[in-house]
Image (cartoon, rainbow, N blue to C red; front, side, top):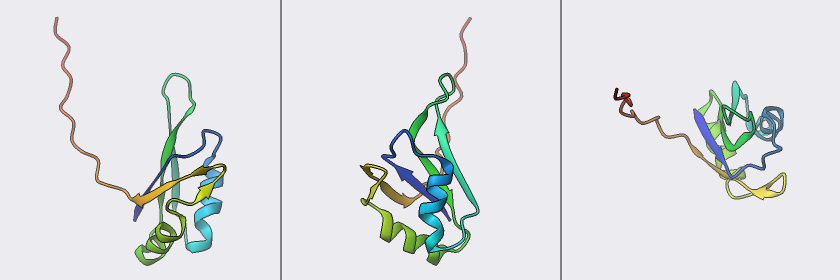
Length: 90
């Protein structure tokens, strides 16, 4: 199950997220989104946990809890919406 994690402090690393979620079960992947130009964190990311019941436990335990100085948002990730392709006009 893919889990959305938002309202993160900009100093949070992928390793920090993995450490926070591992007590609830296996973490198969962590991805923080970063600005393409600056490389700085956008303040949100995703954690992948293969076992849905473990993921649900992590969501229940961590949602709206303090993590690295901020109250984080933890929810099941929503499917990425299709966006219309932008076409340049010449």
